[in-house]
Image (tube, rainbow, N blue to C red):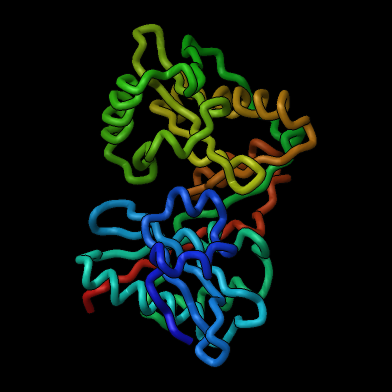
Length: 286
């Protein structure tokens, strides 16, 4: 197997393996070629998260060419190219790479591939699948007003980023991330009477479903604990659009959040087949 950089000159040979959303977002494409038949048989797509990090958005090998080294060749090529470009970190997620068959044999094969290339596993939490009709959150009496993300102006979002990123200095809350990643309709920001943010629920697409990626609450356990209110507002919007028997995923980054998810659904939430999100990281220099 041979790996090569995909350029305008050879792009047409690999085009069929590139989903439209990946074409739009990826900054770098690498292709695999079967040297015995001179056939394009795979594509790796990576997105630049920063000047120092690449995120592997797609790793595809045509069925009849799998388990013959195509994936390994593309990942190795990416590592070598990253070194030349002074990229110090490469990451990816099984949730993103196993869209077609999250529970299949490729899950283990994918992990072995990255391990063999020198990557390490960095679990960031579990993803649970919840039936909307099972969610029984308690509404807390509060003065907070929940505003849909669609009504938040750009300047206001930037202010929110600064506030949330500094909240508590606790890594579990993390950064808000890119606004473009979230649903404007199902994500909400909570403000108190003084128009200060007190919480947020951020929801993004996960294939054809939706994922509650972050539930941020500035007063967990306090009198203004509004986690339930945030969940219920999103669930109500999802039910209106998708029906009460549809599903939503929720990302649990710690034990407290897992307990919260179980309480929400009376332990009916299921650890999803796409559940164990893994980021494989590798320093490309040694």
